[in-house]
Amino acid sequence: SYFSNKRELILLGVALIAWIWALYYIEITEMMGPQVSQIGPFGTAFSLTLILIFSMILLQFTTNQVRSIIQKLRAEKDAAEEASDSKSTFLATMSHELRTPLNAIIGYSEILMEDFSDTEEYSKTQIEDLKRIKASGQHLLSIINDILDLSKIDAKQTDVNLSTFSLFDVL
Image (cartoon, rainbow, N blue to C red; front, side):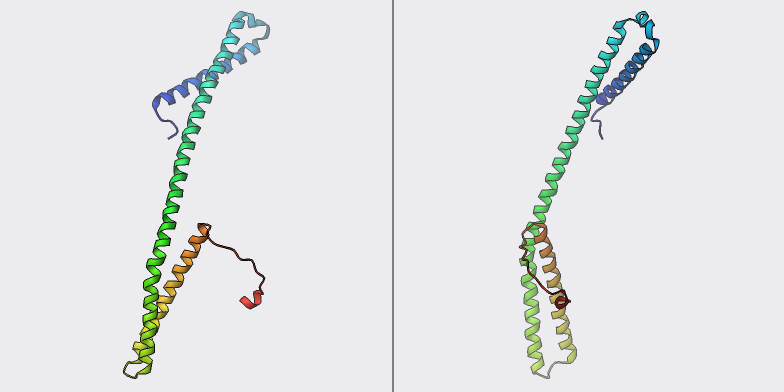
């Protein structure tokens, strides 16, 4: 909410009403022209003083609200930066925790496939199952590597190497 308490809201309402009244009073005195002396110069000065005072109140009120909003935005920015740092730390930790077992699964499935292919004791379905385990592990490792690469780019920890290459060779 832009208004922290009822007092500020009431003060703002009174200031706006007084400001509008003062402008209206000045407009009436200007329209009356030579008859201003009937109202007197004190009325115009009083109206201008009211406008000045209540304009200052409105300015102070607005300044306080802007300060409050800026403080909230700074706090939210700090919280977002802290969350980003936590994410980077988490990803760096998880890269080791996920890659090590996945590499073990991939390596062990390769060893079993080599052992099984040398003997005829195991069926083709078992060898196909091992190939699926290996392919799934490699696919998951590839996804994890891509996520970690994106987090490195996000953390600005990636080195860019400029080189010339043929697009047709890449495709």
